[in-house]
Amino acid sequence: MRHAEFSTSSIAATLPTESTRPTAAIGGGSGFGQTFARVQGEVADFIQNGGGASAPDLTPEGSLWRARSAASVLAAPEVDGNSDDKSTSEDQQAFLESIAPWAKEAADKLGVAPELVQAHAALESGWGQRPIMRTGAGDGASSHNLFGIKAGGKWDGAVAESATTEYVGGAALKTKERFRAYPDAASAFRDYARMLLDNPRYKGAIGAGNDAHAFAQGLAKGGYATDPAYASKLARLAGKLQGING
Image (cartoon, rainbow, N blue to C red; front, side, top):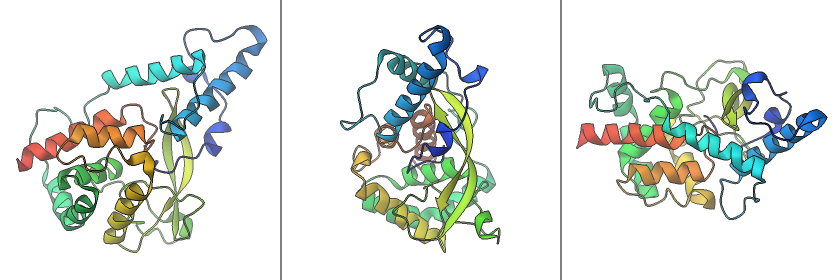
């Protein structure tokens, strides 16, 4: 789920398992392994480009895998129990209050409701309970990275290495990635807003106002995360927070 700057290096080295193989045959005989590897790389390439105009056309096999990934969104489980539940726990409410000033600052820059930014931080960090720790630095301190933004080649700041899950063809693959690390939460929110504004892939999320669905779809289509159910989860959680404050 933690994504933002997608890297396929770890995924490409992962061998297919029974759970990652499609149920319908793709190719046949001894050519299956080569076909699978090509389709896996193709779909990962498509995800990296966010499915936008710059994304390459998918082959029939790749289109099949993408369709299966999209279909899994319809069967996605609720993010936080019953979607009609308008309440949050005391810990969750405390988390929302702790990030409220920075969420509003970022939301104003992005042209969206503060609840949408709060929901995004809650989804990526598990309501602040699963922070990315600076284990790579040896100190075990929090990276304050509440949005799962990866440390790409252009990032020259501090980093934190953490295990994460990426999805290729609808299959969840465990990998380890380098993430950005910040001195405090305020810096994390400001970098988050700057990253979304500077990257044209996420233009669909900018200026979404109170439209949680448009915001979530804009991020997902831009390739923020590889989880095929990401937009559904984020929109549902953002709608819940809007219902609480509404």
